[in-house]
Image (cartoon, rainbow over all chains, first blue to last red; front, side, top):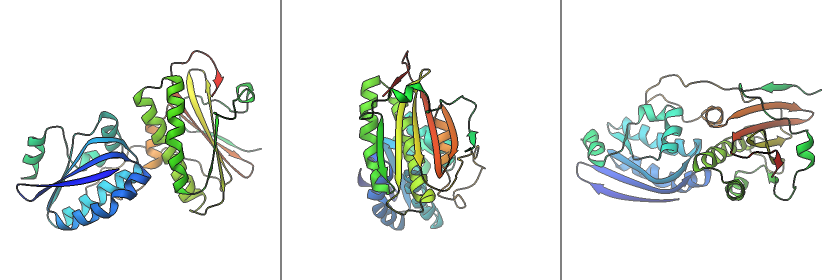
Length: 111
Length: 167
């Protein structure tokens, strides 16, 4: 599991995750996600290259989103695969962290 | 006599059958110790089965997801994150489904479907409690049996295989 970031206009941090967001994957990104949640106002979490998502990975998405919200920010998810989206929907997280499949729309939701 | 609880509407296969007797122990069985790091051995095993039986990408995802959730739940809650306890997973094909029977020696625990989550907002949502829900959502069948001194959770996934075989 790898994580990379890109600063975008409007205080948006794009977080690009790549790999399996399973127990090991979640452990690999949690520290960096916590740091990002404490320093970013708007998070765009790009799941394009995430091939697997389990409940530990859900936690790795939810906790930073909650931290950002507490500071008046917002988080959106970009481009999950159909199965990853199904996990997000089944757990209700997909209902409270908006999911987009178009970068411009995702950025628009954060502006 | 241990109790049996059917956790879904689909009939799950009872592993104590003839097909189990025919099982290829080298490929149909994975033994783990009760530590989360041990779960990293599961995906490679699933890849072997996927290649052998041509599982779709969706089925492979579902198998990986359900096994991870069931095993993490077992390690963290059943065994209270205490290492040194056994977990045995046996796989077999029956009735057009690939089954995984997970046996442990933890206290009794029936993974009853919690149903659809209650609507919540981001601020109050709890970051846990989804594992069993995901198992029931992604597995074709879920069957629980309380064994003498342990539990057996059998997860089934529909596959395109015509005959009953052990894998």
